[in-house]
Image (cartoon, rainbow, N blue to C red):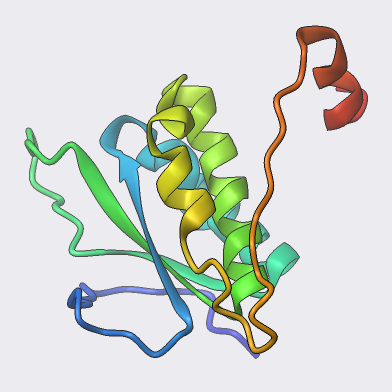
Length: 138
């Protein structure tokens, strides 16, 4: 059973690598939206994808000059990628064009890193009229 409250600062150094972590930079202006009220949006993605996510080294001071907060996503490779893409979709709502600026980094992260050496992520470009079909009726 998962705890419902998470408190206190968490530090993860860049050299931490256990094969179950993806670090994602989330633009400051999208952090609140991505977190959701009381962390509900993050928790719903965790539930959907079987991952564990939290922001690390968060600067809570007023007038912080950090442009990004780091989001740690734990889980197996597929669950991390699903969570990451769902987070990036939310970020794109608040910061249009952000995904395009990091697309190559995201799509090439963890390539061939699964047990079979076949892991990867494909992408495709939709025309405006195809987008609503691909997303489902909104």
